[in-house]
Each structure stands twice: as structure tokens, then as C-alpha cells.
Image 1 (cartoon, rainbow, N blue to C red):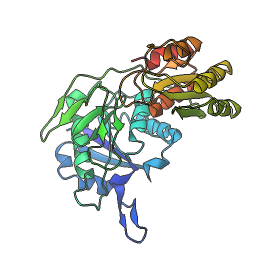
Image 2 (image 1 turned 90 degrees about the horizontal axis):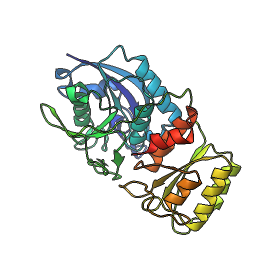
Image 3 (image 1 turned 90 degrees about the vertical axis):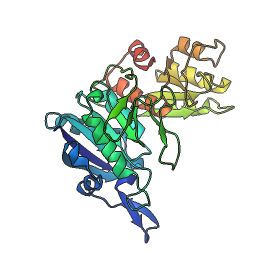
Length: 322
């Protein structure tokens, strides 16, 4: 039987209602969480490590790097890892782990949309599904995965797309990587994986700017003045931006900032469709890096890692290309 280490970080899966406080609060230990998933020891030899017990809004890129180091430090002690995590930043943690981990052993993130004290709490079933996925032979070589609501998602493509419903997680670009059934995991096509980076640190000052109609240059000038290391810009459609944003981006590139351009749409990829000022093609020619189909929050983490690793602009273009 394979040994799976469950690493708990907190989130709704480890929360119960506190009527005095007026809502959910952290209240469930790692051991109690594992015990709530009935039948889990039929699938694996389980060990539990409590990494933290915080809401996922309190997760930071630095904590994510600490989690990656913790997993790599235990890589010889287990056949795979399941990380319980709050859902609000789960996709970001999964993506950064996919970017920086050394181990190739299965790493699966899961959580809950309902608290442990709620009617029909989904945490125990999600945890059991995550363990089933981690021990599945098909998990090998697929990188970091997210399991929620019976679906298996690749870290690069998964997004939280509903604020409260149990089926909040989807992969709008390519669909789920697999489905968990009672006795097995059925896998779809293998997700494409990029080369991993192993930076000694993350560039900590990377801004994420979302364009709207009429966005002007001032926010980009503020980033320059603040000494930002880089910018990720969510443009329209396939990466186009308003005139004011175009001018601000060009000023940022001229000031030495790394700029990555992504789309604010839920699916699709940045592309060189338009060559006029504000078009992704003209901005790439000016020095911007096209971010492929990555969301803004994931592109920000990848840029932090790429800058920390000292990647050149051409290396970044390869990293971000779909």
C-alpha cells in the first residue's frame, strides 16, 4: 500500500461555524480532517503534517515557496502528497508548486466549498478523492493536480469560477484531466507540462493590472515610481489594451520592467491578431511577453519565479507560450 502524506494548510475544509463569531472559523485539526474521510485508509497508508491553519486569503507567494520546500524535504518519506487548502487561492498555490517543485511524485491539492459543520460538507469526499488520485498509477508524470467535486484538474489550467457552489472549479481552456469514481480514476489526455524553475527567491514586487474601458497610463507610471520588478497586464480579448494603457506599458518596458500580457477572458490565448497601437502584436514587438492562456494571477506567480531565476526575455517567452 502506498504512503500518502496529507499536508494541511487551512481553509474552509478545516473550519466550523462559530455562532458567537457569526461564521466559519479554523477549528479542525489535520488528524480530525483525515479521520473525517471515511475509508481513506483502505486506499493508502496515511500520515498527516500540519503546515498551517489559515484562511487561504492569508496565503502568500512566500508561504507557497515554504510549502514547496516542505514537500521537497519530505519527498523520500512518502509516495505522494495531498495538500488541503482554502479554495480562494488554491489555483495559485497549485500553479506555483507546479512551477518550482523538485519532486516528481504526485502532489494533489483539495479543499471544500462548505465548512466541516455545514449540511452536506464536501471536504471529506474531496479529501478521499484526492488520496485516490495520488495513489492512481495515472497520476505519474502529470504534475501538480487539483481535485474538487470528483474532477481532476491540471494546475496550469484550473480556475475557481463560482464563489460558493461545490462545483466551483473548472478548467475552461482544456477541460478536466480526469474524473474520480468509486473505485478508480479515469484519465483524459495528459496535460502539457512546462519546464520547472528552481529560483532561490521570488521577485516580490510584481504588479497585476486589469484593463477596463479607458484605462490610462497613470497606474503603469505608479508601478514604475514604486520600483516594481515587473507587470502582468490583463488585456481584452486576445490581449489588446486601450490607448492609455498602451502608452503606459511602453513606458514601463522602457524603464526596464518585465511586462507580461494576458487576457482577462476566461478562456483562449493571447495572440498577435492586431498590429495597431494597443494590439498584442505591437506590444510584443515593443518588448512585452505574451502570456498564452494563463490567468493574470498565475502569470504573476510565473513572472515572480522567472525573475527570481534570472530568466531572459526570450526564456520568458518560451515559459509563457502555450
